Every structure is written in C-alpha cells, then in structure tokens.
Amino acid sequence: MPSPKARSSAARSGSVPCAGGNGRYEFVSLSRTPPPHLLQRQGSDPTAARLRASESPSRRRGSGSSTSSTGGQQLPEEDCMKLNPSFIGIALSSLLAIDLWLSKRLGVCACEDASWGSVRPLMKLVEISGHGIPWLAGAVYCLYKSDSAAGQEVMLNLLMALVLDLVLVGMMKALVRRRRPAHNRMDMFATFSVDGYSFPSGHATRAAMCARFLLAHLVLAAPLRVLVLLWATFVGFSRVLLGRHHVTDVTFGFLMGYWQYNLVEMLWLSPVMLQSTIGQLQ
Image: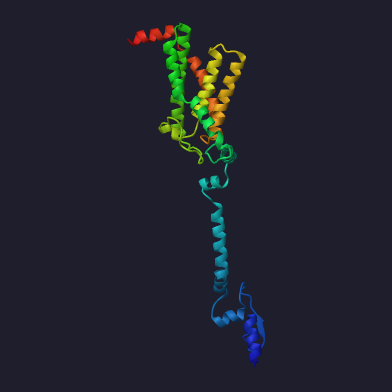
C-alpha cells in the first residue's frame, strides 16, 4: 500500500493508479484518449471518450476564440472606411489644422490685450474701407453726379458688381456656414445675419474685384495703381490680423473676387442696352 506522502505527490503530479493495483502510477494526458483499462473501468467506449475529450473546455475556448477572430475580420464596409481613411481626407484634416493654427498665430490685433493691440483702431479703419456699405453709397453718388455717358456706364456696372458680390458671398456663407475664429470679437461695422459666418471673406472678394475693376476702367497713374493693389492686399490681410477670418477664408475670397470680375465683364451693361431693357419693361 503506497504511503500518504506518495499518494499526495501523485495527486499533485496528475497521475492515475493502474487498474491492476500493483502500486504503480501512470500519467494520463488530458488532451489524449485515456488508456483502455481506464475506459473499461469507467464503463464507456473509446468513441465516447474521444468525443468527450474533443468537447473539453480548452477546446471549446479555442473554438470560441477562433470564431471570434474569424468574425472580427469581417468588418462592415463603413467601419473599414473609418479604419482606412483616404489620402484626401487626411490631407484636408491636416490643412484644416494648419489653417486654424496659423490663423490664431496671426490674429495679433484680435483684442486690445494682444501683442499688436495698439494697432487695432487702424485695422478697423481698413476694415471700414473695404465694407460694402461705403462702396455702395459711393457708387450711387458717383452715378448720380456723373455728367458723361462713359462715367455713368462705369459707375452703373460698378454698382452692379457690388450687388452681385453681396449676393454671391451671402449665398456662399449660408451654404458653408463656417464659424468665425474663436478669438474674434463681434464688434464689426454694420453686420447682417450671414456675417456670423466666416467662409469666404466678403472684404477679400470685394477688394479683389474692385481692384481689378478700377485698374481696368479708370485711367490711373502708376503710383496710384500700386496703391490700389496694396490697399486690396492690406484689406485681406487685416481680416486675419483682426481675427475676423481664417487664412483660407481670405485666400478663397481673393480667388472668388478675381473670378467675379470676369463675370461682371460678361454681364457688362452699356447705356444702349440699359435703355432698351428699360423700354421693354415699360
């Protein structure tokens, strides 16, 4: 008869006593089929034992993990698109991050406590010089005071260009609905509902379009032409300094204003065409 010490060591090592009772111990692997004499002792056949061994918890856990891993590989198409963003999406996100960072760094006149806060009153004067109301009032006054047909034609088309600019910029802002920079102070001169949005910059579109219009239809000396270009550039740049717009708002505004002048040239109104149109309406 084996001693208690041998019996306990056998239990810890996972041994099973032989059916012959000769005192020897045989090690049985849990992952293999038990010996025949153990199967006869337990009253079961080898086929059932193999089935029980195949249904062991370790095998069930392995099959469950394999099923979950297989199911994890079959992701929906929209999830695959989120996990694998396109190159265009990454480029746009990077451009937006750079735009926000650069706009915040350049907003040095956004408030009186900023690094260039003392220049803010001058920047606001530049802002008013590019506002739509002074330009509309000036075009109407010059049209009323003009004596020549050529002058009236130029002022009439300038007035049409200004109205067209207001309509197109308002539609674009209402469509995009991009908020102004977070560091902006809403103390602008004569704002409207769509002026709460940022894209594109109406000052930049107006400055670019009016600059091209003045250089094309008014005989100006070379120094004055340089001043017109500097004024248009400074109006757009002041929008970023004051924190009114992002850099991309001003850049797109310049491009849009340049294109708007081409549209004005296509829709150019002559006095003869205007008189005929008025006659048809009457």
